[in-house]
Image (cartoon, rainbow, N blue to C red):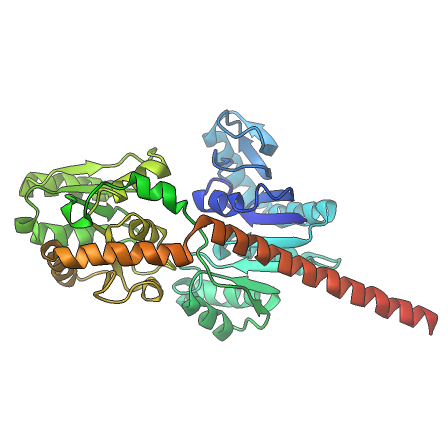
Amino acid sequence: MKLLIVAMPDSIHTARWISQVSDMGWEIHLFSSNTSGVTSSDLRSVTVHHLFQIGNSDVDQSVQVKGISLFSDFAVFCLSKIIERFFPSIFAHRLAKLIKKVNPDIVHSLEMQHAGYLTLDTRKKYNDIFPPWIVTNWGSDIYLFGRLAAHSEKIKEVLALADFYSCECQRDVCLAKAYGFSGRVLPVFPNAGGFDLAYMSELQQKGFASERRVIMLKGYQSWAGRALVALRALERSSDMLKGYTVTIYSATPDVEIAAELFQHTTGIPVVLVSKETTHLEIMRWHGRARVSIGLSISDAISTSMLEAMVMGAFPIQSWTACADEWIEEGVNGLLVPPEDPEIVEKALRRVLSDDDLVNRAAKHNFELAIERLDHGLLRKMTADLYTTVAEERHMLTRFAKKGKLRETTS
């Protein structure tokens, strides 16, 4: 099997997806859909193709990195911007050249606004038969961007030419079809892969989840993230937070400032988790938390929500993700609007005052994880996904060859 994946090589989500098949003995190529020049240290057994790349000593030895090596990320940034400004077609040209050289069984774009659009440009200019193309939807690729004038037509073009579509929400399957996708929809399951549940259970704080005294908060405040709304809800609930610590991860600069002011105003200690903190340590924090809050105006399945569920933290999640496909309201989580601190406060007060709710939810969510998030299960589903697409390609190729043979002999 030869796979050509178009994705962001510096993304943990890309690395976690590829890790599910990196030990299959397949030939895997990763073509960079961005210009950061950075290769994730979590990647394994893959050849990464950059235009410009930064020499990185912590890249695993099983990874080959190709591209013009530059001395700094600033040099990569400047040269990439020049190329994007004056020679924008070079990226599609290089991808087309790589497809012809590798002749992959499958081209798979992970994420739409960069990888999908790049693959679309390549597909439209490609003169030979294009390999089967899988488009995978990340986060807000369709749910939010599909409603924006600058993206809606491009998304429709991607979906019109893609052969296969994969995503992690049934919601997005419906949206993809509404935007014109008529190919085959692949099984719906999380993009970030599964969890070693036996190991994860060992990382959790011993005892009942209701005995924990940490509040986890996803710290994104951006075009989608709404961490400041959550901080306001926490401030309004500060009378119930004596003895608790608020732990914020992935905090943006404005959230860091607001968190310091929150601590000064309320006296509630705040821990800002460093952006260099490992994924394993983030999981340990979830395993110490009574509740985990994640708010955004748009998402697919929030990976942080799944992490919280696996680790026994009660999720309060914005309903703008497809969390309703995992959470039964008031049973194993609470869904809230992303921009209303009063409703978030009410949800938080309920979770802080109801030990039975928290303990039952922790048990329920771990059982759900066994059914839907076990790493062995999702590894098999990922491998089966590729195998199915490759088998269909070979079958169509055989039929095409037989058709040509009949034409020749008749």
